[in-house]
Length: 240
Image (cartoon, rainbow, N blue to C red; front, side, top):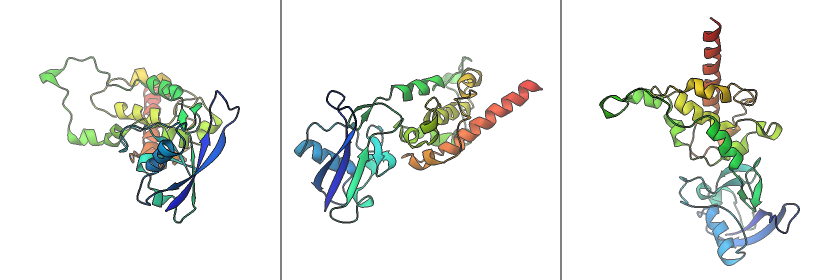
């Protein structure tokens, strides 16, 4: 089938504002959007800029806005976006992050916020028998959050960031939960300042957009609310 790709373009060296450019592409309906973008890159316009790597939904490199929704180009099929010849698919960069070129965004602020929650196991106790034992039941409490690939789809999908760019963001908070809920971790006090902050977990308004956008099916909104309850519980304990 023949589709029309409407892609947002921006070259900081020559453009003052983003613009859209359209390309006609002959593509199998079962192909991925990434395949269509690669076809444009290889055969029509080598100047088109976008990120890709594994092409299997594992690395998160090709996250972008597709017909107004956030997701991975490598996990999005053409037939799910276009039903007939001549249909248009609109592709834009992720929101709330500076555009470096075309569909490539600067993720520095996204990862700065991610580092604030100390995304690693914190436990200085001696390790017995060479490892920290954990039951399957204990692992399953936070198992879905271990699937995060830091693609930033949830970040771009979050309406709160449109009003408050200082908001910590869904990815960072859900990853904070990954460690706070881990029975082996002892880092609550170290993560608390970043989370229990006016721009930490509290701006979340439960839009569920992050959960819907997540390509790894992480229950992000639920995990954010669980972090809120952890903080409330800690406050109650401190006041007793």
